[in-house]
Length: 309
Length: 227
Image (cartoon, rainbow over all chains, first blue to last red; front, top):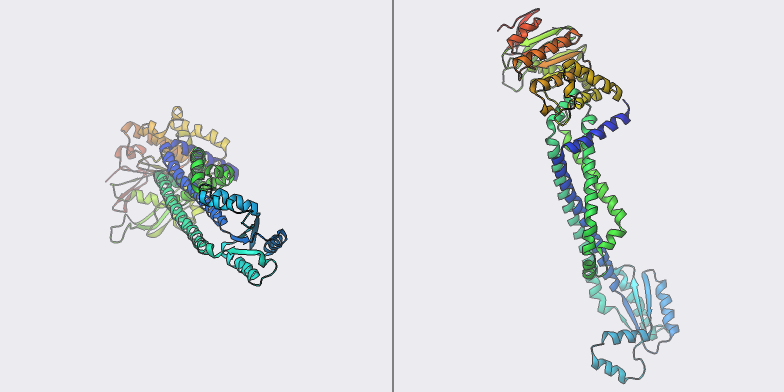
């Protein structure tokens, strides 16, 4: 008999079995839906954590304050020099006018300071360069480079008023540690939750097959080969996976849409709905894939003990 | 064709043997009734033929092959050449009559056209054409047993094993089932029947093997039920 014929029969019996064992199929799909939902939640949570940490990482920078007398030439020279450093990601230039505008905005409610500022003629504030490193651990090296310029009193160095790194150093170090720990804890939680829900789904499918053990015994008796007995159950397992993944994706749409604005407010930059729509293909692939693998492997393993011959 | 060579079966250490030192030969086309009280070893004797149980000592031969030494793949081949019918019918509860019988054909690798032709044919033989789309739970005991027989013979097996096939049936259904078994035997299939129903054995009027406490105590070419 052709392989195609066998496959067709296995698929048909798998499908018929799925429909006729309605209640068993229903509970298997339900449990699998919860499992896949946990996996989806972990994926979204991980993305949210990652994006928030990236956002926080970007808040850290070494700021170079120039004296008001610094010339555009000096500032541009330093900017090019810094950009040439391998550790540096970006160097942002703020002119003294922009710095003043920012300062006024920050102190909009502080009349005293604003008054004092108005007393002065001209702009007392110098331009700034905000330097971002590729990795938070590299800020030390960048700060050292700047301090060397300053202490050697090069033409560029003389224009530097102050390098604001010491102030941020503890914050930078602590943030680096927190980022590390949260990534590790996140992965650990993901593994534990994932394993727990996989075990539950596996057990449910095992129960489903347990109810069919007499049937399997008869199939053995009639002389059905291992794959002919196993096939329909594995096929039904794959169906559980696909249906559950579809349900989870359908549920995620309204859930993320409802949580979207709130998540953005809470996390700063991350919007779960935007993530859902932009990463839909990725979510689909992972959920359907793990549903199929989970259903198929669970059925395959669960039926093993009832096969004799 | 079937040969039990000094076969002993002990289920667990210290228990009396279920089958003790049985030597028995069966020729093609025979109709053999194996009779005896419950626990005499009739069912164990049959189970060892299709390797659901393995002998503790001795060998069971099907043709020239010792059944207990077969690889799984060869065992499947043997099982497809042996039809089995049981007291508790053992139909597939989630499949209807047609599918139950078709399953045995699919397992044997028949194509769809053959299956569509063979299933009605065999249902005709057992007189159940009108129940072809029913599920087992919608049938009476006698009807379920006739489906089981149809499934057992649809592959035209060399041997039909019937283990207490009338045990759960009323006398009229039991008579019908026995008549079907005789008809199958007349068509050339070897039939091994275990039973403790005296009326049936006497009506069949063929070879009778009597067992008691695991041993064969009588073997009559054209026997009656005597205990």
